[in-house]
Length: 48
Image (cartoon, rainbow, N blue to C red):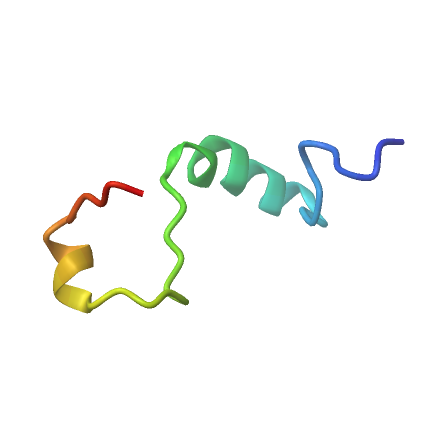
């Protein structure tokens, strides 16, 4: 068994179903950042 499989941290069938059917297609949103809320809301683009 691979340590980092596609089901890593998905501990039951409901978790696997919800992740692979819905959440997997969604963008990653990291609320622990140093951006202003307005910049996130406005989808501001940065050069780097």
